[in-house]
Image (cartoon, rainbow, N blue to C red):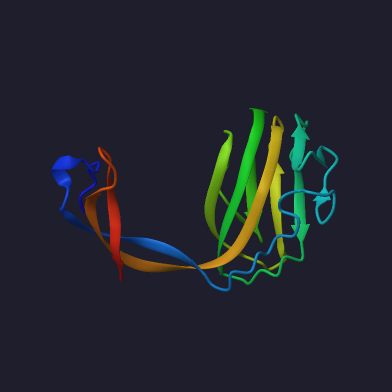
Length: 172
């Protein structure tokens, strides 16, 4: 379980790691217009707009949301949610898959979250802004995944004149 950086002294060394790998069940994208190319497919509270290929919100006075309904979620099913936050100057957002919250986000970046849905009343994806959120959302993706235990064998290899990498040899 070597976590050291690949360097010349590690060349030829093998390491074994275990972890969890998230594998797409069907590979079907559940979000329509996740790139916000048009102002369609999303239900928006008054603080949200879609323009410039992004969903934008500006410093609301209460919680507001943008959502996509009828997403065809299954109860107690694991989903991988990916989205990008940009132009954030204040506040944050939280995504809700069915009725279960993802993690709150308060910085620019691309985020991948794994959320198990709870859908007694909600086949939907919501992006909720807190009362001070000013920023944009883009590239929203939602896919069903399954978590698998995985083990890996890596070998430290020289990949250039002075570059070294851990190269995966086997995934069991």
